[in-house]
Image 1: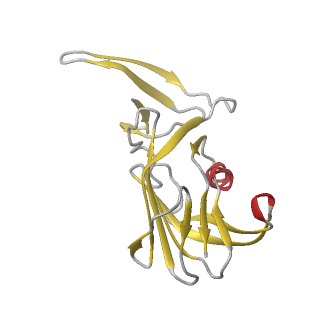
Image 2 (image 1 turned 30 degrees about the horizontal axis):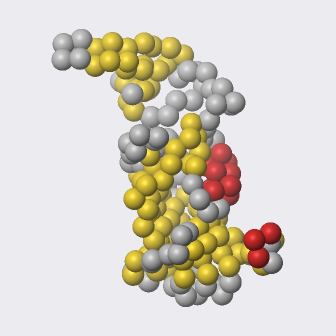
Length: 177
């Protein structure tokens, strides 16, 4: 467990360069064992998380997919929600836009493709997104028929654009509209 010194107390969070960090190695019934150090971000080593307990809805109705392909109608509100977990399946509650100092409203790109699997992007919409206590929720409307995708690559570029040093290892989601 990592805690960051915010100037007055130790708080959970994801450290930035120069932060004083306290890493708990063992917490027993009578003694706490930890080490403190100044965090240095090694850009070569990103934290990788995964998604779990994912749910998708369209117009308030749960979507059932074939693999990661989901069918929905144009101009219907789509909601995606998933826990962000580590390799042991533990929800990463420190991933929270308020704790991380991120804007109150985030955007998640969903792209329209033509030309099949090797197609090109012809349109893009942005779903409103939140990160709250390790849960990612995104809501938006797909405006037209076609092959729309939320790709891991675009998701992770959005995370990096926010100055974060973590990524999500997940499969792409396809919406056939």
